[in-house]
Length: 440
Image 1 (cartoon, one colour):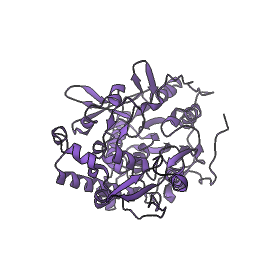
Image 2: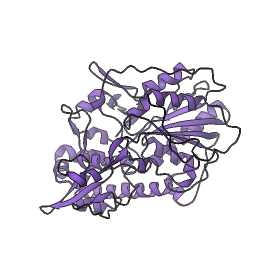
Image 3: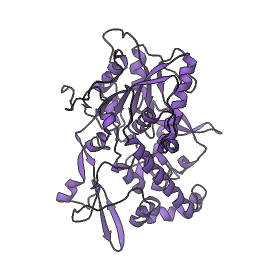
Image 4: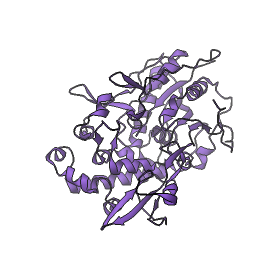
């Protein structure tokens, strides 16, 4: 998940300014992560995701977010709950506009605009979302009447969308798996900026799929795990970066196939948890969720598509001069492993921070990262993408979402957006040693 209200506050952010007018302003498209775009009921023009009250009071366990007819609205600029405001993407828009960029709508682009947010249904598969972004970028090129160079700022799950787009263009995942390809027409991807990205997935995703999530601590209601099981994108963010993701109660590794539906049934995950099964049997849930057999079929399909998309992202593909930048955090203890133990004939899955796990075993459940993605996940890229890095990974403070609002990150995004184009088509060789900005 992208954000919660635990960190709400009235924050004043200083907008960095360029020292001199750039030779040219790159066309910048910001690709939000999961939950970063409003979802709207079209017939009632009602925002069901994207306002503070949506996070505070999901009286139905968030079930309305499972509705197929919801459409994407705007990228969320800020979340307001009474007098309290949490900035989301407003600082990024303000950053570029203050430095001469013109904000536009990617659905209805103008010739003058050069700053856009990709507004998409983040519940859907990342390959599908990448195809939607490809179509919008090609339409933008047609409106401008010539080839356009694009810089993509990809946050969190947005990186999976951008990386798929860079590798496969307009090709669907099914076609790409068969070795077919279709390049973007009129669009040249020049820069891909990864900010707070879990390239190898996150164990916190499995935790949300199992336990749900409360976005507002203490007073907020819980979004139930069976709701999250309807989001295809979450399954594509399951962790794949290590072989020892699961341990038994003695600390020995357990081999678990996360993409096999029988695994989920065996360990009582998500829709197979006793509490979730009881809720799904209630009349209110039966109006939203399919029958048990169809639920299992849906789970199997989502897991299979997630496995296949991950295999596509792990392939080495010619990136045609695309330059990568990475902004990450390696200072926050982050869930890296979970414990599976049998108790009273039932399996329990215990995650980092669970008080039932203590001592040496508890310490093994965490690793350095940004609170959502471990360093190992952040660095999970095939050789062709590693070779595309224009500079070492830039490590900063700030949690998984909040780091994009850190002043030095905003300044770095501005510098990348204003950087002159390289005379060569090819990116430089990736440096080996990660770097950090100077201490503040």
